[in-house]
Image (tube, rainbow, N blue to C red; front, side, top):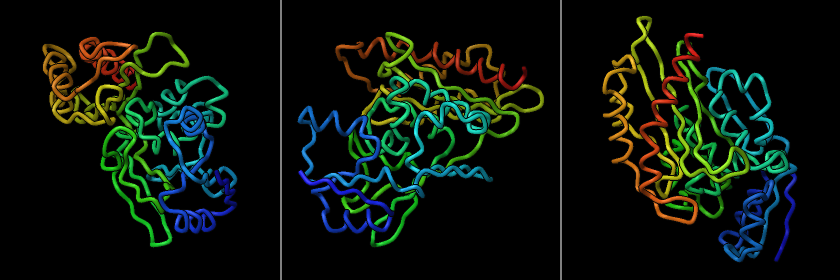
Length: 284
């Protein structure tokens, strides 16, 4: 096993260009080290990037830009981030314990490509894009197009995630992240849901974004459920139709933590609770 410590982005990209498939990028290591010790992954070299300060920045403009080394602790505790990205802040607070949050990074949570990645649904409802870099150049793509399957992404072996950009919460909108688990903290989501809803002046829904994790091989948006909410006042049978769309889009598995049928049954009620919280956030 080789261990390379990159101090600059150029140095990291040079190493990835030379090592290719043999290398794995390492930041906080909260996922990669566990997987390595368990024999789930076997890279010949780690490229450690935690010391690259340029990848730790946060820029709040018309779109927010996050460096991939921004930690969950920063996302969870920074008041400005919490004001413009409340669902992302809430999701970061659910990632492991404070020790994991202190070193685990948003880039790692994305690139690990876990079906249960907590920060990904809030990023999806914020229309997030990722920038990938290599010695060949850079490319920017929608986060929803980044995931191929469980723990599989579109990144080439010589590429590295260098930025995430996303829409701040617009005026007149609310967003939340809700997580179903056996306990309130340090728990992998049985179901995770992020919801961002915009309201017109008369209280009707004029925009809706809904994203799920832990119910499919990759986190995903559910456009049919979003359409079911638009034009409604979050009353009547709107949640029946939206819940049915969520269940149709889900393809969960049975595992030791929960059955597929249980995961599906939670979706409608979870959406109703999230939508009501979005409305309360706007009207309070």
